[in-house]
Image 1 (tube, helix red, strand yellow):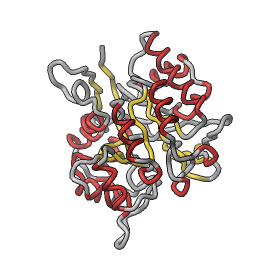
Image 2 (cartoon, helix red, strand yellow):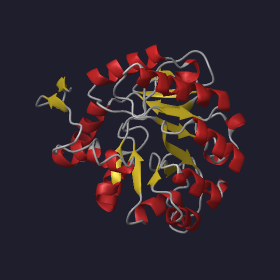
Image 3 (spheres, helix red, strand yellow):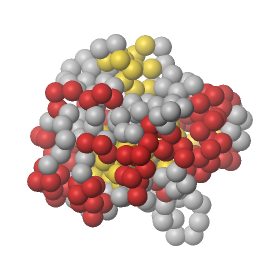
Length: 306
């Protein structure tokens, strides 16, 4: 499930923007996506939720819901997120957002060390997946949070406490756990190919691919500028220029993962992480199935869907 190319521009969110994004991603081989809204003010989250609901009312397809990344993260690992909106959550704040975004919000990325167990349990009670990210959690803090209901990690290695020999951090906790999954960005800029290969050997089916893609913007809180094959904001790496087909090619050609397994990293495993693997991500009777036809170079030739 990729980050939408328009994920950080939805402060002016509209049905048209989501439709155009969906058509673009369909051409690029995406059949289902969960756009991301980064750390922002509450009104922006509400507008994004409204935009997705209105898109669904107009019979829009392909958008499964929203991923809220922030604002309940650690400013020490903010990356390109707007620090002025980062803060620890209150129960009332969380409840208000969850009620407004009921059935639209599918995942929330937060830093477990700044969120209470009560907050985590409340989010999980709405059926929302919680992913640990933009976090400076210790190995012990991260591991305890996994036992409390956090089931995933956001963009492994990036914007999190690193694996060090005396302080394994969130990265080490994700690698070491036997059930928690994690996304990774296979563009060669966010993570070195060897680091992806090491994580894959350890995590196996717990590791899945995302694009973390954004697009050129010159207005609003997040202004992304293309530099080669990646985007930066104020000189900070802020997103990729990937589509999932290119991510697939990178996993095969640069990381050395066999094609069958790379395909699962781009389909079956993310569906499981988002807890929608009961009707997406596999070719089975009763599943919502679409086919992406690739040529020998693993480039998209055709997308066949209903």
